[in-house]
Image 1: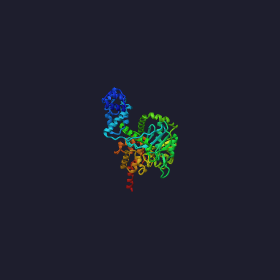
Image 2: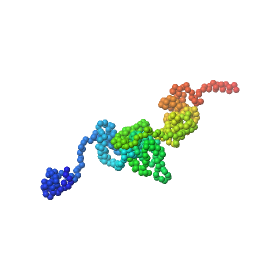
Image 3: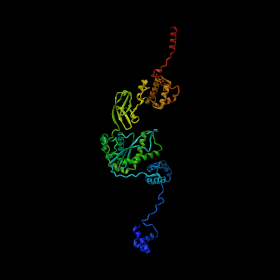
Image 4: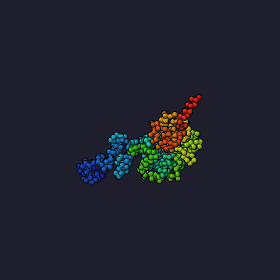
Length: 495
């Protein structure tokens, strides 16, 4: 191809002489080439019109209507999420190399529909294995339910800044326990230890040096955690969230990605927190597959893991009071009454609390179920209340003895038909029977008897095959008083 100066020389000489051969010679090119340009072919500096035809078959032509439906429902759907779903739905029809084509189609669709472009991100330069950033984010773009109930949680998010390899773990709060669990989970999943761990200035890892002083120092327990792994600690400047840019940017990408994945899954409900965590880990492993090359460089530069992980809990001593309750932090927790006045050890996990006596776990509760209040398991105290049923009427934690709405309705029906003392005694005895015969069987039986005159403790016992057992309440004893009445009548008559 000729240069711009050659083309200009050719055209200038031709205008002056009108001779092709002389002009070609003057411009230093072949006569045939000169003839082509003089005949009207565009010169090297002329802008060619953009191509209006495809050079290859569009791989998404057959599924575009389906993909367009996804975009209509969620205009900010990521092309990577859509391609993963297409790979799953149509095995063998698509491949990872089709991503750029799909991204172009997404851009054209958004341009046609008038959807705004996303913000620009600025790539940073990082060294392999040097820095890990940790932070929490709220999954505000999506909602997860566990068994139909909203699961309110955060994600503790870890990013290796060189490869952008990431890991995340659900947690209930931005606490040291969640930091410890999230960091350890990420390090053991990665299989190596970065040189430094960077966090923000939250009280989880830092504390203020003095009133009015902006600088903050690291907490001892945070430094102890990092020392176990041989990591250094560093934090961003106060109020400079942009210094945690890699993990902050990753928050946005992962939040959108998970929202897309849940929509494509067809449901955001999981049978348990464990099932949700397993799903999340599968998503993260698929995302990290794309970073395999740079992550290999990262891992090669990272230090080896220590022989073992640190325990995921903190342990504190506590004593059981006369109410068979243990006070731990701002909450109280029940234990079986046989441990009353004994010393126990409380293991504080991020999401639960366990109470131990020597090598036996005596109770476990959701740590966030009743923050600042009392968590009472009726199973721990039902035997004691059956021996003292009169205490139930005004018992402070009476509500804990209604396992479901059905049991509350049974209690109210018994109180309408019998005295308060008998109703409470019979109710507690029925509840105690569920320990022996199973809650499912008891609720099926009570569901049949509720609303009928047959809802009595005697009938329940007969249905369960315990008709020979006496009630604990004196109201249960039925005596024939007719002979006594006749004797009393005779005495009055002879008097």
